Image 1: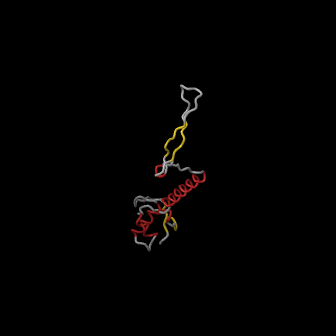
Image 2: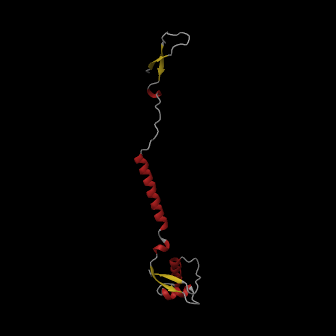
Image 3: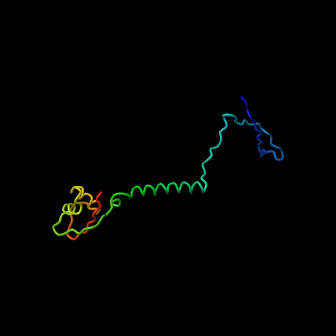
Length: 131
């Protein structure tokens, strides 16, 4: 076991002006007993810029992934106007003849953002391309 010492010079004593202070030996830790101060992480301007750009790129990628698809992915072939007394099923059967009526109704609802199968005379409907 080794020990390290350092000189510790005490200040002048108050009651004895002009008299030099005595040097004292004090024990200093060494080896595993030495505790190094913790260093804090410091970000440079380039580091902050890199983090900001990474977060921004992730946010843009997430927004693009969330807001694409749905009705925007539907290709519109043409549009038609609903005649008096005509139902959405009749429009689907006449405009998309090669598709089962239930599927055609669903495709027209998606293309037009319709919440139900109710349509009214004079309403213009977008007809999607047959897939």
